[in-house]
Image 1 (cartoon, rainbow, N blue to C red):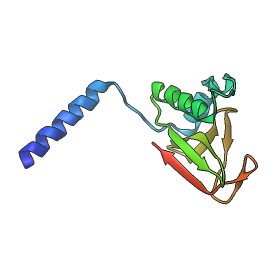
Image 2 (image 1 turned 135 degrees about the vertical axis):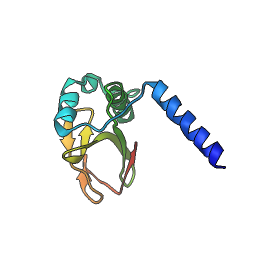
Image 3 (image 1 turned 30 degrees about the vertical axis):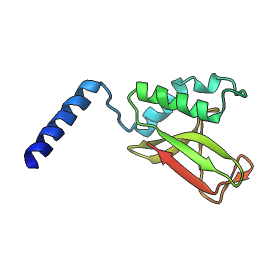
Length: 124
């Protein structure tokens, strides 16, 4: 068992190191600089490009910049919305509305986008 564990652990580390994917949590200032430089907010909201697409593109751009970015799923009573987040190393979790680049505060029970938030989930 131990030999198999050690071999698998070593191989996993080797595979990860060769992947080229190294994500870090940004500082607050790094997060703000990234948000300011990201151009996802310039995309047009259409029937075929909605909040999910804004968030997915923002997250992809953050990954390309080397930052770990969360995909936030907000549920309302009869609809849903998605935004992004960073867990900054010096200021904790911040939520970003990728359609506007606004830093937003969200909590269950709060009104957001004229709806009451009933659930929040984050996919890292």
